[in-house]
Image (tube, rainbow over all chains, first blue to last red; front, side, top):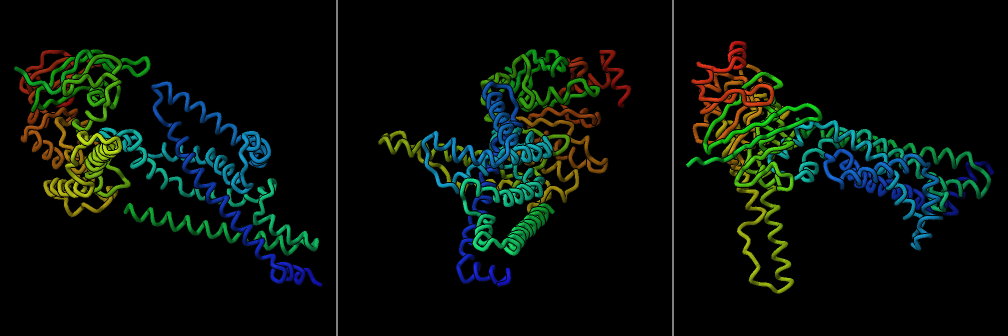
Length: 230
Length: 274
């Protein structure tokens, strides 16, 4: 049997596509939820970093955030996954699905990167915008949320798109903690017959399509945001 | 009996080692129009920005509404609602349309108070303290509608109601500044601070902005204006402050200060700009 026939048999007849679909779902879920957590937490960290630091509380928070970012940017994500799944959560006595752990770790990791992106975004907004909002009597939090952060998002959208793409592709490492993602699913198909050429080429094509779709989506969003300001 | 709206006592402001303000004392009466002039770098803008604590004073006191707002334990936001500020660079919110720019602060701040009352009522009900429940005077929709009406009224006043739904990037400098002024007015401030309101404008647009400020002055608004427009200062101000090196070097009515300056610095400055 040719390798193409072997692949076809595995993929369609013997139900390999089901594994691939659930793998695709896992990949998308981890990346999307991870990015969501990353943006929320990353924004909080970024705001802590740009906050005026007259009092002790912001200073302490700032140090905590620095340590956080240093840890998550300074160690490989695989290591973070392993520590989370095999060391940290078991030690805390929390039993969690591998996919939940993966999503959390992706979120925490992404927050470290997004916080820096967001900080640059916030600093790219004219300080006068914050001043004007504060002068009207709006509290710092409201002014940031309503005026500064929406404007910074517009500036950093392309970079956030980058982060999303990186996250999608990085999900290929979650099989380290036994999550069946897209990569693992295709490897399983290959493993069945020790025939990897077509599954891996197929795998690459699927990633390519996903990333292309994201790129298009981001571009559409950018266009819309730009139009709203003309 | 003088009716002071702001009274500043020995106000100092340092930026690191640099002493920008070196003890400023001034009482501003209700309805008074004060122009602040002086060479660049003398601390005019810093003085103005201290009045609503955009810069926290290093020492000294600023009494406003009977409260020392220079005290950092005071919630400055409540007081800023009553102090309108207009910036040299307009600072309209770029992500909001003109009408949203004007409505934003009144709506947010009133809604916040409403929500707080709602929360209190909820807990009062929860603990069966029915006497503590306060009838809500308004709803969120009402707040929005009132703010919108007021915003349109203000826009009509400056003849820009057709610009209500455009974003600031499409407006001229003069239009932006006039909208920035009515945005501050939408909060019904007791005093307005102008930080060189015409310095970033093309010459042909200066007039429209000054006209609006002059209208406000004629209506009796208390205002402090940092300006380089000497003609305007002379025409509008009740009192002119000449600042130099972080202190008020000379003050007086426009006639006194412009026609008979006493200090050598004042004479030099006026000679250079007039």
